[in-house]
Length: 456
Image (cartoon, rainbow, N blue to C red; front, side, top):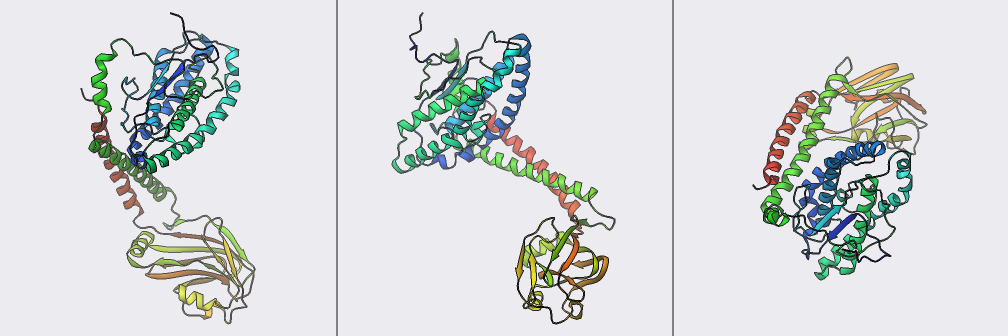
């Protein structure tokens, strides 16, 4: 049977279809949440896709053949991603929830097929593959707004994301999806998927520089394999999801993300508690040099009031400030009101993030202090002298500030400062976060498994 395909548009071995199923006006507003389980799974699948493609490249380089199992896996990842992109923010062409499978689902409105190349070039000519593809990668990157690998997990990126947003707004206002935008989106996604297949060495044919718009691929419709009709009912059942099932899966995915964050925080806390404490048991910041030409250096207010302040006080425990200077330096902690009154007419610099390696300074004009800082009695904790000096203070309720000055109140204050705390409950909290995160992750994984397993 002879092909009737126009000579001006030669068929490409990557076939992409997408048939509009009029989406609802507002569901696209929450599809980022509904599709979150897919995004999580696809992140892992695209990582595996990268390793699979690298292994296939080596095989093609020396044998000229693409391992069939690697090829089928890569096609499955692309197919899955295309269904998710069509459902979510790559097209928003359907409200039918995409199935969790690498296999072809013949009755889903988004389909993809890549013709298997029996033979490819091998040896040195293949080395130029990446260089020849650079123009295509740049163009596809503009379409998706970044890396072309895993584009379906990047909802609002590039030209495709912009067009989907325009179509979604029109859909929200008028209740209809613009056909012209839909056709263009199919063409742009088709271009991207062709480039992905070429980048993964799945086809030796260079992608054409053209947008083929429309729901059907210009190379012809994807033909169902023999026996496909027998599986249509099961596929339709697996592809049709209830609202409760989708909601449970989305919430379980969010909970899993929270659990992963808790596990990471707990593990980090344990490492810090066991490895970063000094000989006195404090977790300290690295020493950083601070200097100002004014008469004083003041921190921003630290608030330890109310319920949040109680939690902060219990978490921090005892504050320790370490100062090192060649000249006698005064370091004191006072209430924000007392410190502000004392420095109201004194030239001083206020530093944000005091104790960090870098801090932003705001200089306040004024004159010299009326008395030396040590002569005042409002300090709740203070130390003065040259060399290494250490101040410790049990955190109390209120709003507090740290003030650093020369002991005699003269200008040009300079000192290396390090600030830390005892964090008495850090290990307990870290273990609780780690254990709780693991339990929640296991529970979330169980819900995700039950929600996504296929009906026999």
